[in-house]
Length: 80
Image 1 (cartoon, rainbow, N blue to C red):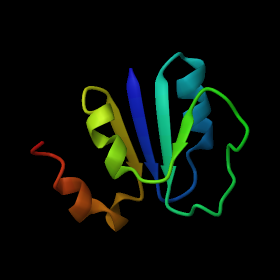
Image 2 (cartoon, rainbow, N blue to C red):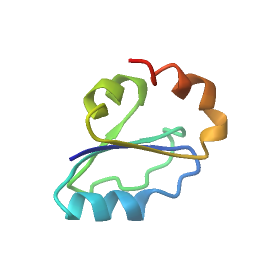
Image 3 (cartoon, rainbow, N blue to C red):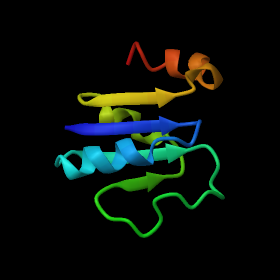
């Protein structure tokens, strides 16, 4: 399964690792590019923008932490 994690609270590393260990394809976005969480670890891909991965994850799971920051932008993708 494809899983996109949009992590604006910077708490997703554990979930990212568990998903990748379970064999899922994982992309992880954090809104602060300066953070180095997960750097050098294998099994998932850190992405610089979540919007480019929305079509990739459409048939999978999209998880967002702290969606209050992005709720209006995320709503636009519901109709795609």
